[in-house]
Length: 217
Ligand SMILES: C[S@@+](CC[C@H](N)C(=O)[O-])C[C@H]1O[C@@H](n2cnc3c(N)ncnc32)[C@H](O)[C@@H]1O
Image (tube, rainbow, N blue to C red; front, side, top):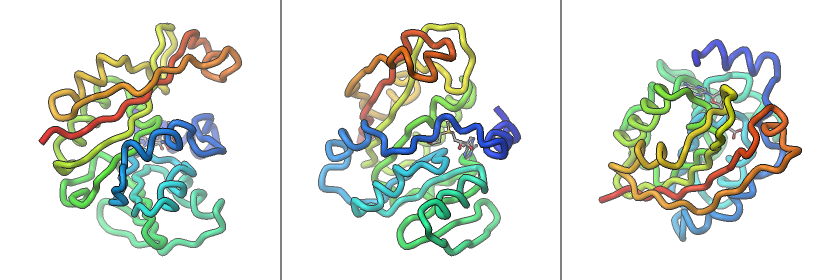
């Protein structure tokens, strides 16, 4: 899944993954994941998700990382906001108050970029990547995230022979990717309704799964 694939998706506005509303599992589970902590939240592969505004409104500084300049521009424009734009070697940073979108390749992130991150929100990021990239993605997060990090992770699993993205990521894979570094707890599994676009695409029996990951000391 190279960069041009995603640039094309955004160019053609084929963004079926984008949610017009705030994710219900974020709303339902965030207070349990964050507790009283209003520390910085990292949102990898964030698209133009409105969930970032929701997190920001709850007092968190937020950093989203996203490849597409279209997504970054639209994110602020659709909210009627004008960010300051700062280009550096790895990322172009769109900054508004304590909400930043870093436009560039997630795999260029370094530990120093996330040293003050307390929480991570992954909705449709891990499952956007094919198996080899999922391993690289999780390995990078495990390598750079600080000791007390917790993550709300929303994935998809199904048994259908349909290729992604989104890719099917079974619970065992989540545990294998993150288990050596994080305690992995399943919060809920929800079967998608028959009229869901992914089921209509052939992913019968698709299940959305919600996990909380707590970094081991
Ligand atoms: C399935 S979308 C999910 C977006 C968002 N999490 C949401 O819930 O709407 C995956 C996003 O990852 C971005 N992306 C893919 N590869 C990336 C990379 N290497 N670095 C940063 N962003 C990337 C894509 O442009 C796309 O917006």
